[in-house]
Amino acid sequence: MSSEKVINHFSIDVGMILKDLNSIPNPHLVTRTTGRDVRNAIEVKLSAIRSPALSVIDFSAIEVMDFSCADEVVARLLARFICTDRPQEAFFVLKGLLPSHLEPVVEVLERQKILAVTENGPGLLGLLGSFSSEEGKVWEFIEAKRSATKDELNTVFMEKEDQAALRHLTDQRVVFYETSGNRYRSLGSVMDGLLN
Image 1 (cartoon, rainbow, N blue to C red):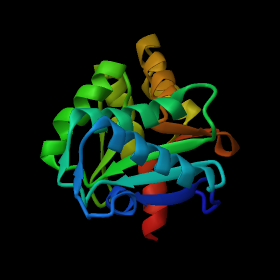
Image 2: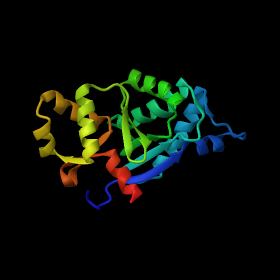
Image 3: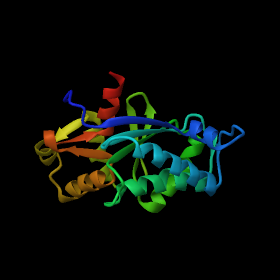
Image 4: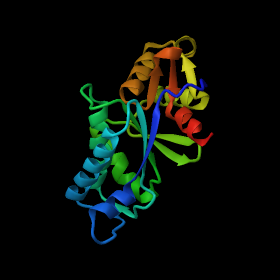
């Protein structure tokens, strides 16, 4: 991996945002209004970071997350940065999701046809949402290698369904294309750089 820093890192602690929003500490991410307030606070923090940026959204301090907050804080946030008129170049990794968080998060992602990357442990990332077998194998290949050139991917994934999967993964911002190296990089490769 190139030592050139191509993407900035920013960690967002959802528990701290909730603490700042509430006069009484509350580790429960519930009600749509709360979710909207948390998402707005995240977007304000992101606006202060130079693009491109990787934002690690940390849910470790959250005990309960309902469907409305999963929709507001995860699905709507990601959707805003997937669209072509996004406010800036940003990528996201969800961290600290409990098993009880996964049901509402996966449901809202699948309903809105959005993919997300989650950190399941140091250096271990997973893909959330509804994705095809082609998308799964292309994502896993890039994630395992951390980066792959266009030529390498064209050699391994020659079927048009695989090429469509790569485009979709890039559009969903769960991998990114680095023009300087003519390669696709995993979000895990950025996370690795943060640990070194």
